Length: 568
Ligand code: C2E
Ligand code: CA
Ligand code: CA
Image (cartoon, rainbow, N blue to C red):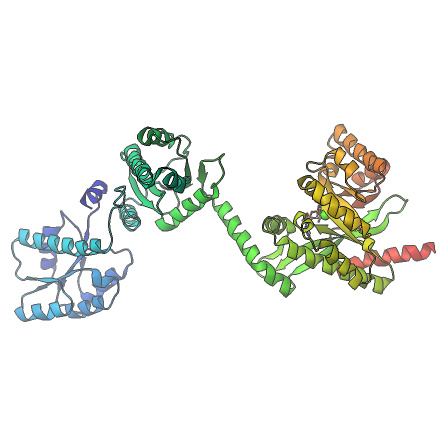
């Protein structure tokens, strides 16, 4: 341990508790070269100093007779404390009888007053500290036997000591993991695996030993490195890879490296290394990246995502999900009129407030939870069509979104048909939006499903047309009933002539295939007018209305009802 403590100039701390100044001074003089000496003038003050979590004393020299709180009381309090009872105490007394009593109260040793020769006192203190630390070393090993690096426990202890005296120095937490280490073990045997670990430890120590560097090996193939801060780690570990190939004669060994840069020291080192490990884990399996920096925003986002995943099922049960409806207006005649609606989910989270689908749909798509949510929306939407029918006497078709994973559900057709039947609807009233990219994913399976659904009378809309990988060729093979132009075309429409032409072209294509075209994301009159002139059939967008709750949507149904009545 000596080498490290000396290297960083760290001194053990001793607390002298004595009410007489002369005694404090004598002892202080003897010990101060070798130790960091602190003083207390009575037992109560001593306990206050010891109570500070960072006090970290290696030895207490304790007078017995003191005002306020005497030495015996201090001994008893120390014995009763799980942490402090491990700090050795030397009692200073002039009474022979008190010696035995103090040992019974937990003291380690005693020094008689008047004091012995300074060298004797110093030697006694040193010996007791050593003995006591020896005891704790028996409890935990300092070095990893294989690599000679610190064990996890000592690693963090040394960081703590270092930061005690150099809290201002900018330091990084680096976690380096050997990729597929178990494969090396399996392919070449454990001995070779061990050699890789030892060579890594040795090379790292050679590379960084000249700076402040504390290293540990944990979890078999991970190296925790506490090292000087660097703005950029590009190339910093390149030498390691070359040296390892040279030392082990193995094909190129890959590392993954996660770094938490110069985080606040108020955050415990363990947490900083957790962050570095998280960054390291994030690039597992990503062969394009070797280094990953911990980033608070990424981490927060991940935690937020986990929370949403955990809360989702409860939220369905508690009614925190609400379906909104956005009207689609038919613009072919002089006065636009309501044609249908799109059901769009909203999450009113009791703690997090309104959450937009952009934050949870992609998340739920990635883990399959979306299926549950979609079924909920379909059920709500089907029930809503029925309610409007009952209330206003007209049918407003509602489109629901069908996620790509739903397509693989063998029960999809029956499920939808069941909903239609249960609510007394025709299949054409519950329309299905399937995003264009799903067609590219699984063209054959999807075509089959879509064919079956259409045979049963469902209408299929291709959502986000033009956003991804659609080829025009696909339109000749895929049976669809409506094309929904991706929003970005409308957004860019008036930016340049080419974009405008493109929209016109897509409208013509829809016409060629004989399917209506819905333009989404129409926000202003200019867009509306241009689209109308170009022959677009249907418009969905803020220009007419944002998605609104079902009750609010009632006004559109009522108006449409009035229009139809007027025609009759
Ligand atoms: P989407 O299916 O393309 O839905 C259209 C999105 O455009 C909706 O966003 C709608 O609010 C928004 N929008 C409509 N008009 C305008 C406009 O004029 N300007 C702008 N800037 N935006 C407009 P929302 O509701 O946030 O939904 C986003 C996406 O989340 C949807 O895109 C859809 O992919 C997904 N989503 C929403 N609800 C569901 C659902 O129930 N199931 C599934 N699977 N996905 C859903
Ligand atoms: Ca949609
Ligand atoms: Ca869309």
